[in-house]
Length: 98
Image (cartoon, rainbow, N blue to C red; front, side):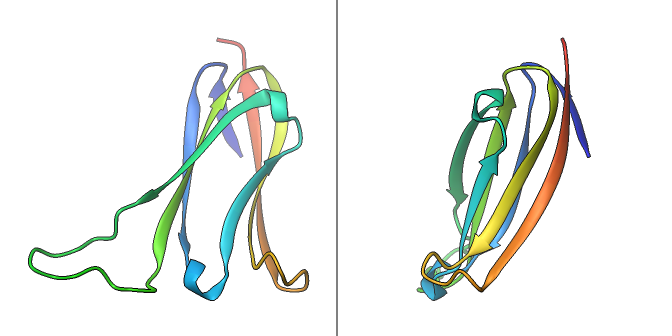
């Protein structure tokens, strides 16, 4: 359970292996409840080394609460072409007035 106030936000980050087709996505039961953005962190590359081609990346979802209430936010790791191979994490988010 995540507890925040309207106007506050939280982030969730996941390792993603997009070269194998596994992509993380987010869905919110009430799309008007959160402002959602996503980005990738650069890989940890030591000085003088090249990035690993086809390696895992870190995908970060940033969610900012826009209204109060209790909501479910679902993060899913799946291959878009394979409906049988999914992993989902469900967060309960309680948003209080500020």
